[in-house]
Length: 389
Image 1 (cartoon, one colour):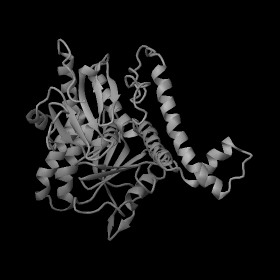
Image 2: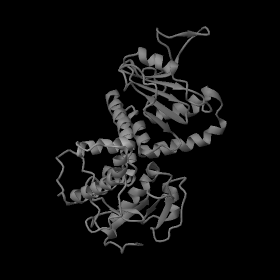
Image 3: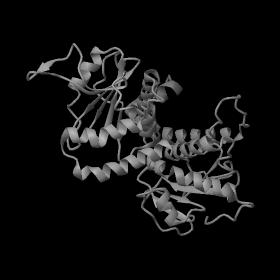
Image 4: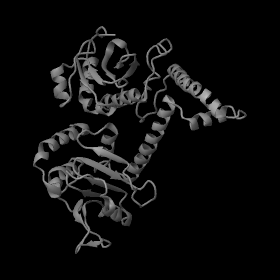
């Protein structure tokens, strides 16, 4: 079973157990230990996991030394601290003890605070060997998003590397902040951004408030024009084969849309659509390394095909609510089995089955369905006529 499927199964187990879980100790036994086992750790081997971990620098409170619930060890040294709270307790304001242990243990670069339903992961991005005051990621174990699944994957015993986690955390934090800023600037450039661009382009112009107000809508149009121009140029760039041993390149969703130069200029491929396509392409190429996976944007949906518009196997809408995803070659009943808990929608001309999406990261629970739809389309002797618009 694939890792996302394992996590989905764990989420269902959480829901089944939760009504019977009482207090912190029950949370550990019913929710936390199964997760540690799912991540590949032997919870019964004290050489690998030490419960109630106490160090010689522990602070004594109320006659007892502070203890960390679990220390995960490698080569006899703790590398991850895990602190647990009852599932009905919020995780805010419970980092003090975890931080003290983290800061005093140089071999530990990753700390986890969990109540079995959420997982806050900390590292030391701001200052080496000093736990950051805020987690770099807050994982919802009942409905993990794509980036949260990747963070969980990096916590697995087989994949664990403190340096890789820190690098991934740094990239995630910086990417998130930069992407938010750029997205906001693209939609509605603020005064500071307008002044910055204008000062670079027109250094001799005196940027009064009136000038900035006149330039703001012009800059907004210029940004969108630059994006469209980049799309056209990227589309014209010839494909270069990857070096031996390197993964197949992921085509940019906006760049390789068929007929991009002739398409209606009002069609703009969003960052959300690109992220969805990249996830889908990655999943398919994990199983089929030489797969042809081609995106095609339109006004009403984003489609993915196998090199021809008639060979599409999935369509989705993550641009205008309500969001949805539709499949070819998968019946509604089968989709319900392949993606348990999904909310089925009417099919109309969208495909053979369709389900609601809460957002971009909700696509992860349809991974198995996507692979199935791709394989069935690939097995077709001849492409069928395209359905719908």
